[in-house]
Image 1 (tube, rainbow, N blue to C red):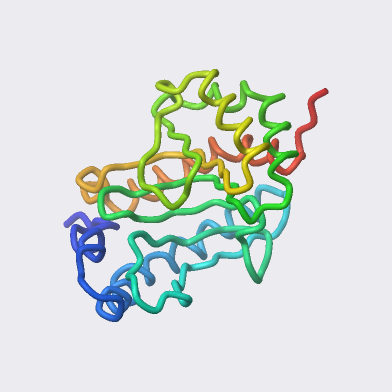
Image 2: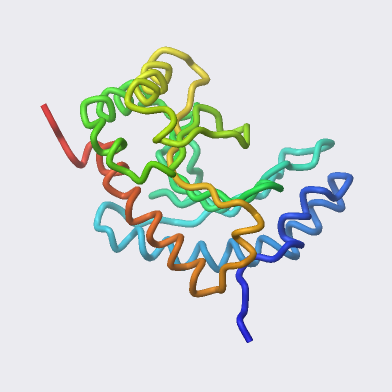
Length: 212
């Protein structure tokens, strides 16, 4: 019998009313899977040879009223805190799964990152056209690289340089109905493929690849 990594109930967590009940479901249904992914991919990123990576499962600890609309496990080369660093994520909204590289507003080097990516725009444009980009990690919506084109990528990077709250996310979305069809092995292979294709972008972001 095929074992599926994600189930319909995982995505339905975000339909549960109330902070306490939704958090209980997140902790029981989803966070154990994030911890499994955390161990696997932290080791994989560390083996990339840049830094030692550590997993960070979202705790949503600061919430007192509004239940979270999404959740994730992040990977970054720091034991404590990841939001100020470029980082990878696997996460869920109620509608889809996401696997991304993220530079969010807490990052102090957004201008430098945007300039490096702009100089190496081919690294982004050579990704599969179905990969997505976004300028706001708080919103589920994103646009594909094929749809936005080089001009759209340039605008996102310019905004990253000039707008304080601007962000840059790149990666892959998978609709919930497609995610629940993947076996354990198929999902892990899908995630590994995605991260392998995002690692060259990460190398530019952290200035491992230099281009005049």
